[in-house]
Length: 110
Image: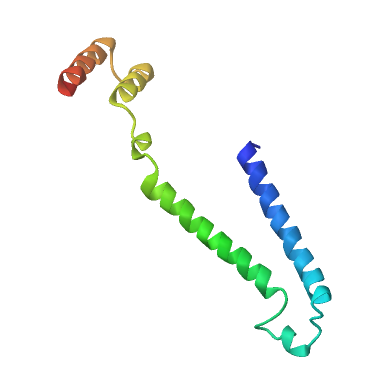
């Protein structure tokens, strides 16, 4: 498990512990014993859960924007020479063909 995964697990675990603590402590601290606080729309749990879902939503949106728009797209495309070397190592082309294609690629890049 790499460091990023460990950090994400710690953050997620901490948020779960925070939500559980909020569910237990908020009614005690603020004396939320009124019946209307426990309807389906407004409970002491709605604030922490809504906040967590909002943070998760915007985190996913920011990640997708970074991943799709900002990240360098050149990393997705292999260099022609890398493909050529792989084809040579797989036996798809001979050494003579490799040299000829390499020479052609150098001429085209000028």
